[in-house]
Amino acid sequence: MTDRFATTLERSLPQLPTLSSALESMALPSLVERRQPTEIQEEWLPFTVERVADTDDLHEAVRVRQQAYARHLPEFSETLTEPEPADSQPGVVVLLARSKLDGSPLGSMRIQTNTYSPLPLEASLDLPHELANASLAEATRLGVAVGQAGSLVKTALFKAFYLHCIAHNVQYMVVAGRQPLDRQYLRLLFREVYPERGLIPLRHAGNLPHRVMSLDLDDAERLWSEAKHPLLGFICHTLHPDIRIKQRPPRRRGLRLVQS
Image (cartoon, rainbow, N blue to C red; front, side, top):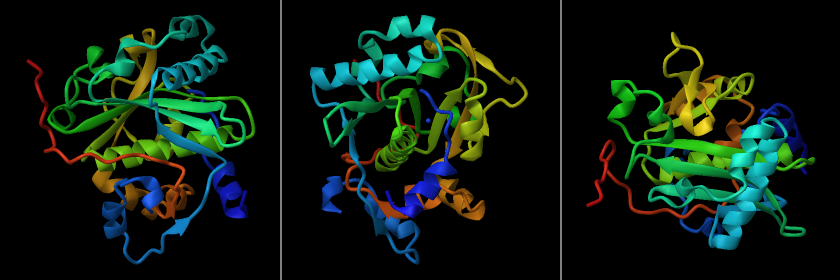
């Protein structure tokens, strides 16, 4: 691992238990257009991050998800031993980080857009007008395996979330974090959706109180740059061919498709 990688990881968000042709047409053109003066570096990871491709992949993602939750929420983790209905719904992508060395699962994240249905957290609260009429993506069920690579896997999964949102013309990234894990998103400059309400119980998270936060994709890179955020280079200025997110045609923001 390079010194620059090590420095980035040491200053990244360690608490998260739950946070270029090789990229196969990922949304790099829009990223390059946003920062033409900055040279894009290339770095390889000791693992890959891809969408689950079949049932076997999904069960591996579920296994690492359940094990991660078991370390902090053992009772709730018992409800996560099998794939959830949300894992296969339209507009949902499950990511799996897999070791290059032995193929073992190292981390997973589920991303859901509001293209086909409301976000999971909308079952617990009404979003303000600014978000309710925008294109959104929520990251849930984030978990990483125990080990030295955990921080790097977590950071790569967050980058995959960011790139997935750009590729799908998402306007706001939406997350929910319970204490003290909510601080990791605040350090990434997410803003509270309802700062006056504080922690809000969420049905899809076992009714545990969470802080609901969002980040405007149009402002994210500027905010990180102005703040000299330690992950700016990793997320925005580095090409990682091992993070493989396919792009689909963009859609109009705020447009929800209704299935007949």
